[in-house]
Length: 139
Image (cartoon, rainbow, N blue to C red; front, side, top):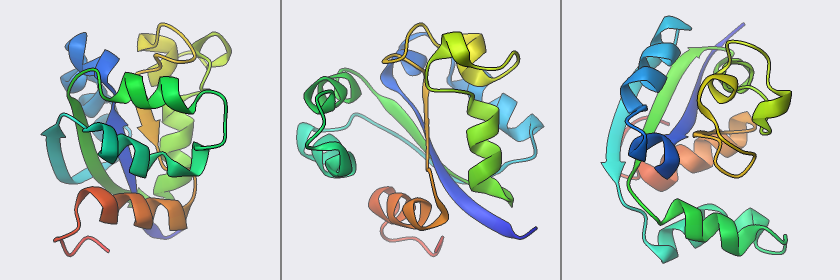
């Protein structure tokens, strides 16, 4: 295994439900080190840019609207096999299909309002970290 970095976002539903601390504590307990953290309210342009890969998909506009409805907490995380481990700890996108004990099983209310985002690949993680922490030495 090798040490990797990945990006996570506590989405607006998680922040609004006061779950940020619980989510971050869960991640730290799972072995993640938080190497950068910021809270912000995404503009429409920021959300569109971040989710541009989904632009042609039917859910894109709803996703952008959701991600701009309130503040989010963005974190760069580090640990061995970070990308895959974060995906495992988050659980399936649909909380009804997520394994017991995963963040989405514990906290998500629907497939759309699923509390947390995580990078899906090492290269994606690099791009996402650079998007939110452009002036850092995280890469």
